[in-house]
Image 1 (cartoon, rainbow, N blue to C red):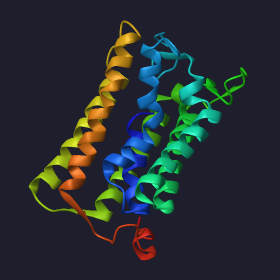
Image 2: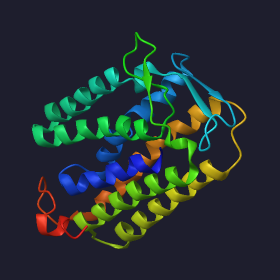
Image 3: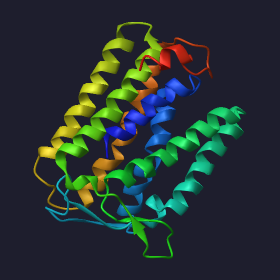
Image 4: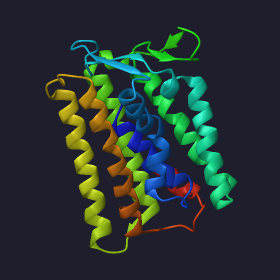
Length: 231
């Protein structure tokens, strides 16, 4: 799951207009922003095994601190709690916490049974949708497209940068996603972690886009029910 997580971040704007798109991306991708750091520090492990699944050559050998359900819930409380302390808004903090958890839920759908439940047990889960390329593509494109649609319904461009910048980001994410799916596997695991750190640039891109767009609704307001019924 890659662009699906960004789709969840986009969709967050349809639930709460207050946080910036960069903040929503940060929450939705938090555990994948943490994971490369832990890989480079040698705390977690991943191996390149072409054929491991139909969608990815990555074998997630050991990643309980970034991806176990136990720690994901802790990270969700941390992200939402820090936002509340800084912004004094419990509703948005709760939405950001849910986005952190959404990452694990989406991963649960596609991963083979390698997602740990708790760090001290070998019990792992995963529904294995990555074994089917068509099903994986359909799910991820649906989540990504639906989230982008919600974001565009909740905001409008203030200038050309707000319009072209958004479409450029959507196109860039699609190119990267398709290259990962249909391109050759990486030779080693370490470069994967280094490239993973570049996702911070996508978070910054989200902040830049939101500066050049404005909310259709007041900050903190969800899309009206009549609009949601049209989705």
